[in-house]
Length: 348
Image 1 (cartoon, one colour):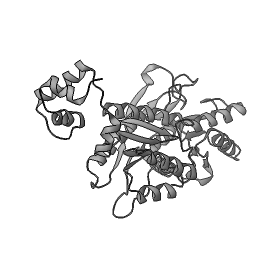
Image 2 (cartoon, rainbow, N blue to C red; image 1 turned 180 degrees about the horizontal axis):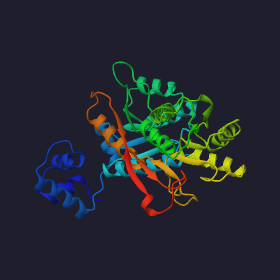
Image 3 (cartoon, helix red, strand yellow; image 1 turned 45 degrees about the vertical axis):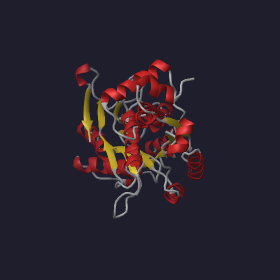
Image 4 (cartoon, one colour; image 1 turned 120 degrees about the horizontal axis):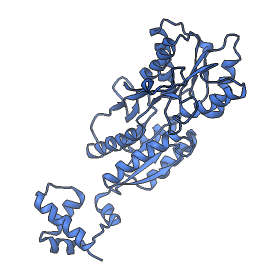
């Protein structure tokens, strides 16, 4: 098996230069770097990451704690995280906190004990123990999708998410433009920043359309299919039920569709439907689902880059990065089918 000394001899450089190329710890002239890389390729040299971690106190690994098993949205984010981590030479350790605050703290501790260099975490609705652990152990971390309320002196952690309020308002305005005056919202789990922001966007969309806000037209589906099925049934049982619905994530869209089917209601004939979160099969439904698409993979990739910036500059101010969404215009809102009606526009 080739060693670093073998690479150095083959490239005609010192072992220290090979180390600098591998670890990017000092600028190396382009032709020298290429000679080292060619020698590595020629000899089939594989760096000893364990030995390197003992010297550098880095394991070249990132911990990811998201509920990817139960949420397809996070599955796409995971793909973005994995691709960006590999691109930058990092391996990925994944744990599923199941959106449970106690389990969340346990899996984060487990990742920390595996000596990951930093973590990317999608917090639960009650992240107190998580935050306390990260702060107590000074773990470099990026919070994903769900944000913490920032104190007056700025956010405590780097955070990456999509825009939520304006894209939701866009859905509401679109339904209002189609003549709907009773627009219901199947909202997410209380405690999530995404839930608060999408409710805020719903209210802004109503106000911009000259419509009043009625609290009884908002039902919490708790970010799950089962919860949304119950919430939709509640809205449909009102004396004056909504003529249009906005569902606030992809799982709740499925639950709402189940509830509508159970009552023999058609979309958009009996009730119009727009959803926050596009997903792979949304274009295969009949009718095709009008949706807000989040840049899921880019959110994951950006979280990796923000974390690497944090590792490179531990004292830099924390920042919150928001990425724009895309309005995908299909037919579940009640618009006609012709391809000329398909519209994709950025919403930020």
